[in-house]
Length: 277
Image (tube, rainbow, N blue to C red; front, top):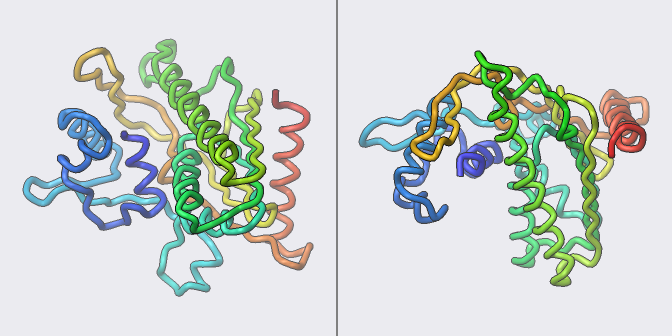
């Protein structure tokens, strides 16, 4: 549930300054107890996503910021969020999506939204091709980890659990679209590279890039222990909520945007072909 809530605040479903649905509504939607909802809200408060006041509910105080030329086209001061950019990419008949990330959490949330649009008949793509690069599962990553006990592997196990869960979800959601005849051709390839991700990268239809470094942070984490959970300080990275830069490839091959998109595409292809398995 906490992952889905972060994704919704990231993609603009719950915009900056808006109030979250009541706890009772959230419990019903996610099929969890009120205690679970309250635990997730406390976690989001600790991470700085929301502010909660008795009698006033929970208000979103952090969202994902995307630096984009579209912001100037749409009007100065209007934020660009990830959701509309993904929506636009999926509005084309053929979609290619190359992603390098620490986990597949954010991507899974957005692909599920696009699947709903396809089922509703809002869009009718002919082909979806996804390639995703993840770190090797046996790689000793410097993050996430428990701050005062690097040898404690519970944070690593938590990361693997999140990644595997959302990877399986991605395969299932996209596979069902092809099986049901809603999208004629679907290709999903996932590889692991022996590299610690220093940044998140989305390459959309070979014409746009969304790029953002992972900022290393210290934050409290609640690790499950069969009861209420153990609260501990962790070294982690800011993924959901991190600033992304949106760069567009234009007709000028020597422009800054075109050079950046082409260079990131070349980097992705080189790791995909020569390092990843």
